[in-house]
Image (cartoon, rainbow, N blue to C red):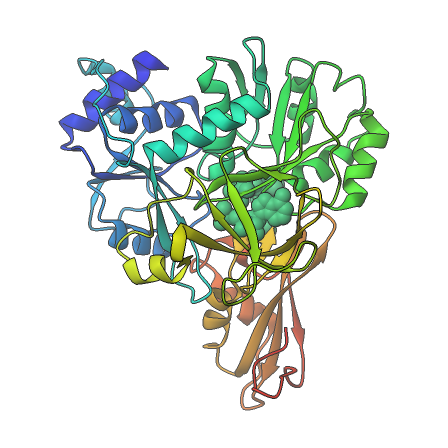
Length: 450
Ligand code: MLC
Ligand code: AMP
């Protein structure tokens, strides 16, 4: 990996990528993808990974906003974009991978300060406009070291890696823990239940989202014997129900360690490694995280009462890319970041999450912003208005569903509604069903009561 990243670092420099430049990456998961991430860090560039499900139109927004020097893409996917595009490719096909093979390895590591940017990850907003969360070297380092410590990573750990590496969970939480100790990683290209069960017998750690645990529990082969060598199962990115926690324990005799985090902050809380893990809670703040639950004015609420979770931590991002006002409005005096998550802290200091203050659906660990979908559906002829909501779903935790009010002027079919989103928004955001309603429920202020 070290050598491969040095070769890729040289190839990036040959393409004109300089210190501080953004490198947008939308490619399938592979070890070369990891080497490319490290190559960016090696030359002081800013790694900007994107979900492979995003459509070219969605990617165009990120490229326009982040103004990267190059985009590394899958062949034939982003050809229309006005930016230098290279393909990772494989050896011998004239691609970036081949250029890396030919390059004289750049073995150095460009020195960067703690506050310099290492990565930028886009996260959506309720207005539908995505914001680039700027993450510094200090952010990534502090979080990695804290997790490595509290989750007791040791030299013999083997991480079974099944998550995508375009989000915080797979890229930083999982990989950094393993990288800090030079641990072995069983690196699966995607989450496939049979593959995971086959590989668990050689692993000591698995990090996953709740949907993946639900799917594992759906396979009769997943039992105490397949988990015999695993010392730590963690879950996060979405709420895990107490029922799944209980099923898991009944099947394996083990307990999942649930933790909570977000792109802007890395990991925030974790259930304890040794102490009691309480299903339905996300545990205690990490050692260097200050956490409080506040009312709308930022005044802390009494213990046990519900409010918005606010934090201060060395893992906290440097702000939203070129959005100083948005950055400021999500912070309070004293450096507190308003997470938007709603919850309460009990007398012991454990955090329980109860929802979000903003309109967001978490489907299978991916965040979906209703506004973005409603804006497209509202334009379909025959549609008066729509409301997109999340409903409980056995596999994804929450599923995206659209409620549609017709204007009666033109017939509008569910097929036409679905077609309006094709190629516009990533498929995981598409409603799993459309429900016709006569009107949307509203409160006295005319706000839709979702
Ligand atoms: C895939 N599909 C989804 C979906 N994932 N639909 C809704 N929600 C999802 N999450 C749809 C696809 O659009 C496609 O539909 C069909 O399912 C098959 O696609 P696939 O790519 O083969 O899916 P699969 O491999 O089964 O993916 C399921 C999954 C994946 C659970 C493995 O969603 C996943 O990797 N989730 C993890 C997300 C993650 O890493 N989040 C971390 C965020 S960081 P169609 O209609 O096209 O057939 C964060 C901070 C923190 O939150 O605390 O960690
Ligand atoms: P993202 O913006 O993709 O990083 O998603 C972060 C959001 O995921 C958080 O703000 C929470 O709403 C949610 N989240 C992460 N971990 C958990 C968890 N264990 N339980 C409930 N929600 C979670």
